[in-house]
Length: 171
Image 1 (cartoon, rainbow, N blue to C red):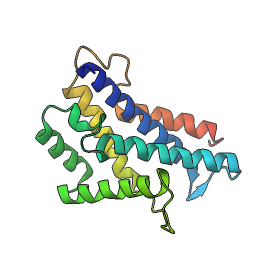
Image 2: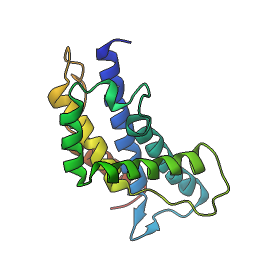
Image 3: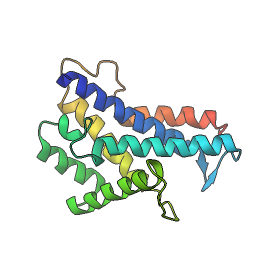
């Protein structure tokens, strides 16, 4: 796989995460699901699960094919910026990775014997992916590989969130 292809795939994964998170959140209002029928409950849960899977591809699998480490040229600068963006130490971020991977491993990939699924803090996940996406566009652009991509993570997320709220029938 060429560097350009890998950059595009990581950018696409960022967008897949942001889309699924926006659609997941659009289904909630005041701690309650907007739509209570089984179809919408299942759809909403699937959005959450796919978002966690995509995040783990980017940050949880240290040497995975779509890990940020495979496309970022200056790891130290990226990590410093990422940690500042999420307001965490390296140890706290490591614990967050474990939190995301536990949900993925114990409730999405397998249904282990844990009685309660602790949904990870998704605001942190969104900040991580937004930082990665915007960093790629600003620092790792190669051969105009993001020519057809959204201009920023924030713009993409906002537009998808609006669409999600419309689909759920929300004002």
